[in-house]
Image (tube, rainbow over all chains, first blue to last red):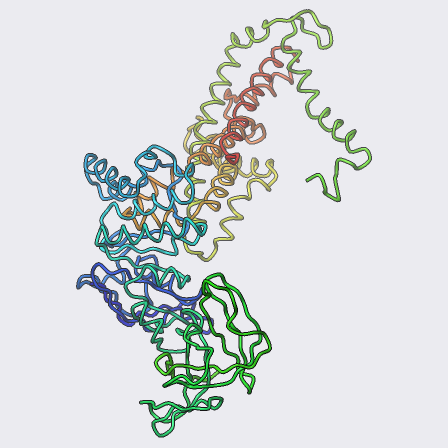
Length: 353
Length: 267
């Protein structure tokens, strides 16, 4: 439905030019909840502004329903945005805000009134229709911004970190609410966030961005379990990285007493293992077995993080779920056996630096 | 606020100085207004409260004519200045930076800095020529001159408001299918309206108050309120002048107060 083809955006000219987006290409399918995730400065907001039409791309095409809209002005694109600061019109009432787009399109008054009523019902704000937007709480403004962007029935709804200004509790509520709205309307959402948890819980697919490039596009599960590179692995969730080698079909971790069979080309690799998969016991079948010393135990309520170091100084974090009966898995200073189960290991190409 | 290390209010003599300044500023005005209500015609000799001089002023045809000229002139000049200033403010804030933008900004504000007498003489030289060539001696010259020096006063509040306005509002309007014109009419202009009105009022008061340029450029027999007062003062000082001055003061205070109410930040 929406195809991005080699989109590049450079700001500035000559030597001082900064490339915010490098040859970004991907497709979004109808009805998808698609998230652009990345640290600040990764280009996600620039990409959203390109799709909205607030900035023209330096090169590349943006094809919506078979038509290249890369240079179409924002008011002629069937795409609406929920802004980070909401950008509600302060001189207009809630109802007038929601009806703004339809008014600009010159729709009949009756139709505008009907749509506004329906939209305010959808976001449960009918009782505030005549209020000025400045008189609303953050959460209410957020809903008005949503209703306003949904009212003209866009082909795609763009959301620019819409939840970042809300407090934790409201944020969780709005996450559920947004997902419900998306499923009810069947609309395509492109959601920008730097919050990995938000991305993982809401999205159908996530594009992880870093340095103006798409690092990986995948489902939340796949991103977490099979990150394409170290950047993605490090950005999504917590993880351990260890330097290892593949040789003659075996995975060799220098610190481990055992090796595992591996289907990987020979050479150095980065071994990734999630803290929750590290087992604090030896002699497991099909696992790399090591010895480690316990540096610190950090209690997190549902689980405890065990910070370890190996004989050569490499550090490793294990996450152990706290049982009903207290009792820690180990004590600080203790030397314990540790296993890394073969099916929990993920190999990444070794990168410079 | 209470813990400020340096508080000007605690400096020795600060209170005395402040009171002295206010007294010099406002005491003469108070005396003038008080005298306008004096039944008698001699200052300092109170003969009872009366609106006698106000009545007399309103029956004075020359005064009424001058007042009418002044109000028409101020309204026209303020309107032209405000429209021009609004366009200039939009051009200097809502476009990509262009060459000479800084020069335009300085040029716009120059009339505040240039000695008025210089401007008056310069205008006189040109306008005298035009008068001779065309034979037209109406209010048009004053309207154009007043519009010109009122522009910076209207420009300042409008530009300040435009600079403080959240640009994402205009972006949002464009995102919601508004054409440039629709976005301007429905978003920018309503948000700018208080500043435009404030700019208009400032320009109005500045025009209403002008003596030097009006006196240089007016055609024979033409009088604005200030030039009429100046002429009267040269002849004789009557309490009627106090009444007229008080009326002028009242208009200015009302307008400046109104402009302040419109532009102050909402709490």
